Amino acid sequence: MRKSIADSIICTVKDLNKSGLIDDITMRNIENLCLPEIKEYSPEKIISIRKKFKLSQAALASIFNISPSTVQKWEKGNKKPTGASRKLLDIIERKGLDALI
Image 1 (cartoon, rainbow, N blue to C red):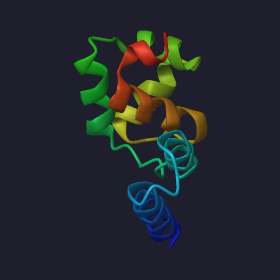
Image 2 (tube, rainbow, N blue to C red):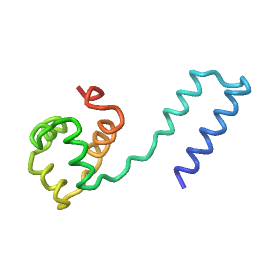
Image 3 (cartoon, rainbow, N blue to C red):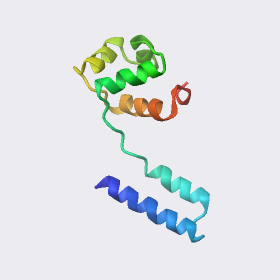
C-alpha cells in the first residue's frame, strides 16, 4: 500500500507542477521524500553487482564495513543483506561506486 500512496503523491505533485501551482524545486523535494522501497537482493544479483564493479568479496566488504565472510554468506544464500547493507547495494546498483566513495 505504501508504494501506491507514494505513486499517488508523485502523480498529484506532477500535475500541480504542470499547472504552475508548484515549482520545480518543490516538486523535486517532494519526489525525494517519496523514496522507492529498497528491494531484496538475491545471491546472483549481489555477485552480479560485485563483478560489474570488479570488486573482490573483501573489497565489497570493506566498502560496507562488514566482514568478507558476510559477503560470502550473502552470495551463497546463507544470509541476506539487511538495513544499511541493502541500501548501499541499492545505491551502488543505481548510481555506481562513485556515489559512495
